[in-house]
Picture 1 (cartoon, rainbow, N blue to C red):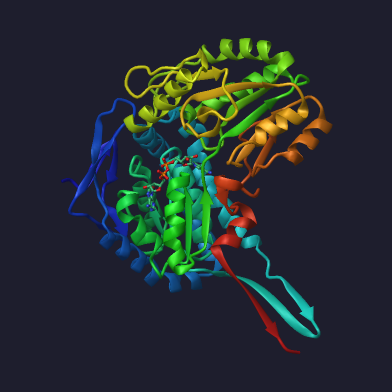
Picture 2 (picture 1 turned 60 degrees about the vertical axis):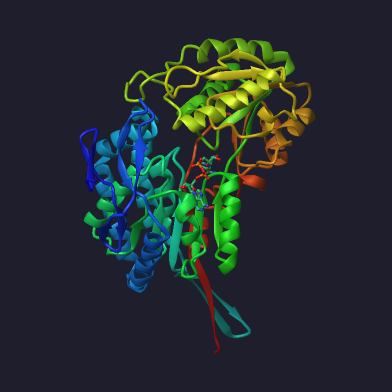
Length: 479
Ligand code: NAD
């Protein structure tokens, strides 16, 4: 098998990156493009042996990187950002080929943000103070110490963006990293390894292990030398990881699924509400934060639906590489099956498809809006992770809050209202890591990000990231 494949003109190494060297596995797995379902190439299929080797490399590199000055760590992370910007076009096309998300989004939004992830955490590191205070004449000196090797496990829906949201603060904090990207989108993590090496990141500070989570997950998450695990993905996998991490009480950060509401009140600017509603089809609905449950005040529900349908049916679905495409494919036939299963069961239970409700060719699923759904229906309670939205109505603010909150998730909520007092009142009553008022997806890296209930454990972002990735130490010195 070749060690490198050419993807849309870009050379990508298919091997792991361990201790500053490319390492191959005896077995491979096939990576397919969601665009046409065709194989892209054969990728090293990691085993527990390679997983352990990556942790050992991260452990060996840790003392050197932890002792590297903050200024030098920040300089190298900025150099990584430079490398991302230099290869932005290559990263964008490889990611689109690999996970099917829109090329125009990768070019304009996602990859610039990947570079920003490195710049932001490099700069934030330099602002972290060392708190000093006095207790009966003794000084307390609080310091942010690196924690050790971190295992970072990421999903396929926004591979490099979500990976670097973890890699950047972990490295900034002085930790070393083993990154395990999702097996459905392994490519850009390999390019990141190249970029980091070119930027001067010492060998072993960043390691990338490819393969199936079910085969190498435990070897990473139950490893006694791992000091932090940060995971983004589904709830069932999070449960397995938490159980595995329990052996060593390894601290965890979990960013999981959602079933977020979009509340539209009668006093809302309806055009804005519809714009925000249509945005929920972004990335073919494969967005953890997506507001997939529309809750619309009865008096405006008909007009909202009319305008929504007009806008949603004008969306262009097709090849994500085309500039004019708004919605691409779903990642994998298994995901498509899952999405269609949810929809067909909902229809069988009495839901009505206002639009969509069926597959299209290949891996494409028609943007769908379902009404006549019961609050306790599977389609209202479970995360679909596809272009499938539901619409329910409410009569009063209390009912809106009750429906919004009747979920085991708590990742985000969006509300659209022209009344600032209502906005404040309702926001305060919702259980959600992020509440957007009259907007959606505005994210500042210094804000805490994460979910409540089954949407996650912990928060990352700004100082919260360093809180997680550092061992905080208080040194008390006598007068
Ligand atoms: P997944 O849980 O199936 O897989 C995520 C990662 O976990 C993959 O890299 C996979 O290989 C790995 N994995 C699988 N089994 C493992 C094990 N036993 N031990 C260790 N690692 C293992 O999730 P997915 O289908 O890739 O992603 C979709 C999910 O991610 C959705 O639920 C979505 O809401 C969630 N998500 C959350 C956020 C957030 O920030 N909250 C962002 C994006 C996606």
